[in-house]
Amino acid sequence: MTATDPSNAITRVKTVCSYCGVGCGIVLDVAQGADGRRRVIKVAGDKSHPANAGRLCTKGATGADLLAAPGRLERALVRPARGVQPEESGVDAAITATARRLYSISSSPLTSPDRINLTVSVVRFSNPRGTTRGGACSAYLADSPEQTTVPVHVQPTKHFRPPADPGAPMVMIGPGTGVAPFLGFLDERRALGHHGRNWLFFGEQRRTTDFYYRDELSALHDDGLLTRLDLAFSRDQRAKVYVQDRMREHGVQLWSWLQEGAHVYVCGDAARMAKDVDQTLRDIAARHSGLAPDDATAYVKQLAAAKRYVRDVY
Ligand SMILES: Cc1cc2nc3c(=O)[nH]c(=O)nc-3n(C[C@H](O)[C@H](O)[C@H](O)COP(=O)(O)OP(=O)(O)OC[C@H]3O[C@@H](n4cnc5c(N)ncnc54)[C@H](O)[C@@H]3O)c2cc1C
Image (cartoon, rainbow, N blue to C red; front, side):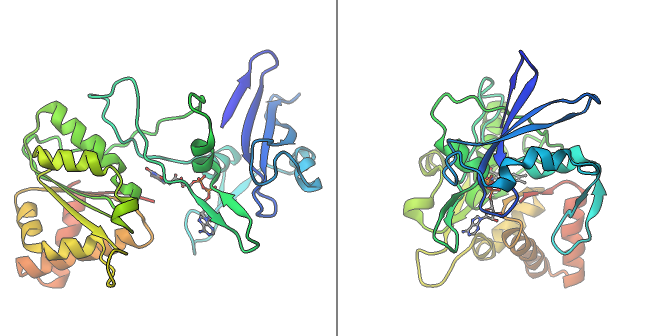
């Protein structure tokens, strides 16, 4: 979160102290130094942050001095994924990667040219000492008063967009907040008059509390834009049911949609869901096509190479 004071060119950045893990809210004043580089000149506690209500320990309060120490911030090491060796990176690129939070846009510019909708799940939990903690960005968004101005940047996507072919069937697999972009996809297809069939797999823990966009999706299903809506609420019954289970149940139809040129989109959890869905697609291809497992894997790879199987997972 940034705000620039044009009178003395200080940029004020709200963030979270990374020192000990408590996650105190801090406000950084960033300004141009004598050498022309922008640097942190002051660190203050963020009075609106629930973790520290403006108070800072010595480490936090002297953060600007530490950052200005010779040799600091000249190079950065970034680990692109767990279990991978850190790679050297530019400091700016490293900070941007650490600080940014991406959210899928849940609307289409064709139907909503002046606003964008986001679907944000608020991160809140208690740490082992029982202190309530909130995600830096999602809790900030949720707790900010209405009309708060929040600077954003838009990261365009090349391939994660509805099929260009008006008649191509579209299969969307988006449990949890993974459903977000598909509201926009459906808006877009309707606005363009695309007549291809649309199938959404959505899942969460409980129908009563976690059925995001229930009314909107039910209306889209009732009016036929959403040809199929298959739901998996994992904790509503003793045996857990996930989107990949629904895919398997409807494997015959899913295979026939694929044969008719369907584009498959997966959005949401990268850690487990995306892998399980990927395996399920391979299993469906093997089971209903008669392909050997290796050939089914090659088929799914080929779908991806043809940009008919696209994922936006996190
Ligand atoms: C391409 C992409 C698209 C995305 N789209 C969306 C979207 O549409 N909607 C959406 O809501 N999010 C989306 N995200 C995720 C989003 O960017 C943020 O990562 C998310 O909102 C959390 O950010 P935060 O600043 O609130 O939390 P942070 O301050 O980053 O805290 C999150 C961290 O809190 C800790 N934590 C969380 N829960 C617990 C717990 N129970 N116990 C202990 N520790 C815990 C974990 O370490 C976790 O990594 C997307 C991410 C990507 C990369």
